[in-house]
Length: 362
Image (cartoon, rainbow, N blue to C red; front, top):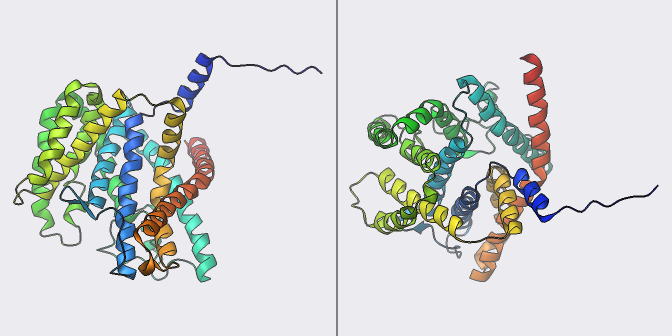
């Protein structure tokens, strides 16, 4: 039987590449990777200094007057708003939106949790968690880290406070998206009013740190929504505004609330990166790699803490020179993404299974 080889034209190959990453925006993936590296850097340095206070650190714990981890989180929150706006379906019902969001997060979270449970059982010969069984529900729904200062939960394993935070923030998106399309400036201004009121509220709600409060971080979230809804990355003045924002953010009066400087600095980083990604020519292969890593970033975020914990505990970090420490940090980032790569298929399989079950019941 004669076999024929079908050769694809350049246009067909390009079309296939576009279809494979349809809905992905380069600057969002670039910033996902950048912000995650900043977050890993913060946790890596913190763990290294916990084990060996005099050990060398990588990069710096603070950049432009803010903790490097806080900058990464701010950009993450902004990207969450931008990503939701990119895939916004104005005619979609509220519960359909929530179901779609749940399917995008929980399968990855549950897969990472199960994988870490297996690894840690092999190391400890015991399962994670004990005590009140009802608290396992908080873990299943990703709220255990967010409520960690209020309810001690030994089933907690991954996701930190951010997972519960972003799940709660998503509840407000359908309302905020409509307001952003109607009146972006008034909506953005209104979120600052809400943030200021929530800041005062946090003084009386001691279990919820100010910067972990979804209401306080509304300006970050809505900025990302506005930036994507109006494609400010394509505006010539966006990069100039971003450069000015980055320049003034570290020099703002210390009396101003921290969230204001966070929005200004994070917005500046997004504006500069968004414009740069539109101006600089990047090869298709590099874009493919960035898109693939960006798609793995959430899983890498979920597992990175344990990669850091387990690796730092097994190396003599106090004796490492700076080049050694930078190499060690690079390995931590690489292993986090490598783990994410192998968790993608199980997470996708779980997502498909849940989708079938939900569809059958519907």
